[in-house]
Image 1: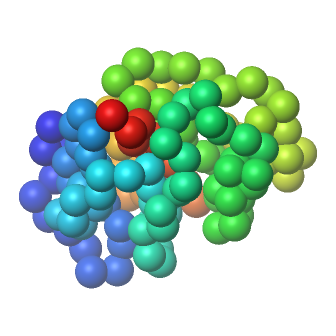
Image 2: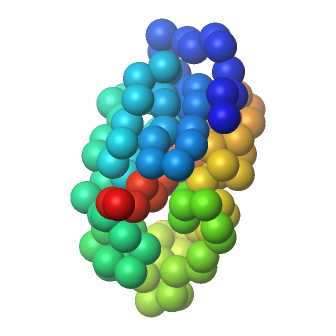
Length: 125
């Protein structure tokens, strides 16, 4: 699904998503990524929901967001609370949703100048 035709040279906008990919600033990513409004899009070294670890979630707090949006693929899945405990202790909210909803919500919050990070899970086929 295409989300936006316009991109900003100073912020990361999710411009499209679908099965097996997410486009940020019209650049396609086919592996899991961490997207923040500013800075580079980072690869998130996770290939399946079942392989999530607390350490992988700790990576999401590097940008000190208010909230992390976890895109869990085509359907919503909720991580075990032990996986997100460190983020929660730091006052960082974690919202799990399907990846399409995470992409749309990220764009809205980013445009509102909120400190948001999207972690979009792209599962290996």
